[in-house]
Length: 179
Image 1 (tube, one colour):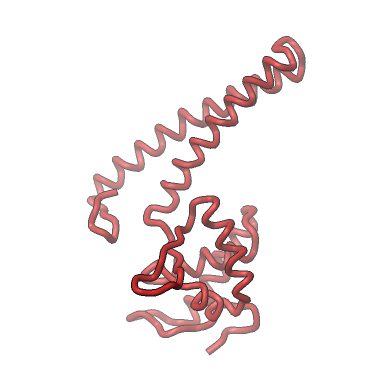
Image 2 (tube, helix red, strand yellow):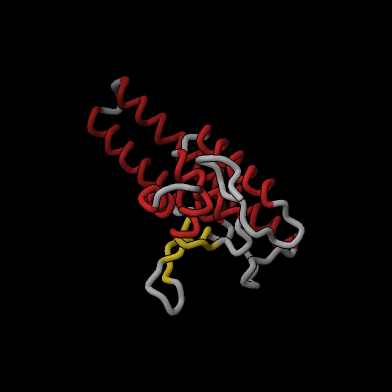
């Protein structure tokens, strides 16, 4: 059953799930991601994968569930893979690709953000040297680099505290490995 044009398709429910409520959740979470700056299609695809019990769907399954074209799935996936929220893998025994939301996706995303911030700091410091540290532009670039260095330090501390928090909860990933 379909919950409306351009909305997630209801599917066979997991035990205890209301398929209409799951489809509505997918759309609500996608809308929140759009407000945060993510594109509409990547948001809907990511939300659908997050709500999927296995965390894995093929392009055809995503296209059917979200009532979007295969091209829309492909474009959304390119973005999600690029930002590290989803991984592409080959379906065992098939030539079809499937897409997996990463375990501990937010931790991994922030870890990769750290690498990006380090590159920004390096370029900002080069820019400061280029325009001159005594200039207004140089001071602006130095302040930006200092801010990102601060963010990196805070991010490291926060990620470390998250690991400790997860360990204290005894939480493991679905694969049985502690995160």
